[in-house]
Amino acid sequence: MIGGMDTHAPLLHPTPSGLYCPAGDFHIDPVRPVARALITHGHADHARAGHGAVLATRQTLDIMAIRYGAGFAGATQPAEGDIRLGDVAVRFHPAGHVLGSAQIAVARAGQRVVVSGDYARHPNPACAPFEPVACDLFVTEATFGLPVFRHPPPQAEVAKLLASMAAFPDRPHLIGAYALGKAQRVIALLRQAGYDAPILIHGALAKLCAYHADQGIDLGELRPATVERGRAPEGQVVIAPPSAFAATWVQRFRDPVIAQASGWMTVRARARQRGVELPLVISDHADWPELTQTIRDTGAAEVWVTHGREEALVRWCDLSGIAARPLRLVGYEDEPE
Image (cartoon, rainbow, N blue to C red):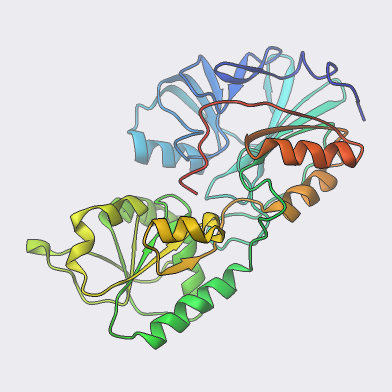
């Protein structure tokens, strides 16, 4: 393993546009348009339009086209196997975050750096599972990088939702879930739990849900949550982006149970501020035990921590004898989660 903070600087280093690899002349998840971008996944704070060329998994390229239009980049290339870029080899490995999400491994002369992007370790029926990759330097997210964050099993949260639906059969359950990843995961978890009735979805989810179904994700029967003249159709489960709950759209549902699926629902004050009656702690990010276990799993001698609660994870690395530094990159959001 290679130690020391400066050893990896020629291979990868932070810039105002994001992480940059001089030997391959590319950025990873850049926050502004660049000549060549490698993209970990399709969320808007990592995947932006306007790059000269984009290398990503086929599913991430498809998702970017759905969200931004076919001309979102000058050129695109699906990541398949080992790819040579300049003096480095890159390879994409599943991250377990959303459909198409990947960690990016960059290797040269016996050194390997892995950039995690966003990742999760709990099994997710809506995407491929996380794959630990041995490396010398691991660049990890830290969205939930405090010891207080310990996510419950998602199946337990779905059981809580089903219990509420049984207790209040006449009240529609409106679930706030981000359009890419979280919405499809909640639907798939409900199907795994045996719920087979039609699920109503907000129009903002329709294209991404259709794409997940095309990719073999079992979402069951989905119906639009609105019909002509603004009336609400019958149905006990309605899934919409959280932004819809601040609009008049929600007023068409009579006496709804307002729920939200997010790792941030661990913070009860946040749930109360948003008027959430039924908080569902379902996260597509690693919690504290998963973050620390992942660092151990990689065997990395050095860790860079980015976009999240950086200081606590850096301190944990220091106490564990692992060299670590916060990157303090800007442009990556806590939410939507």
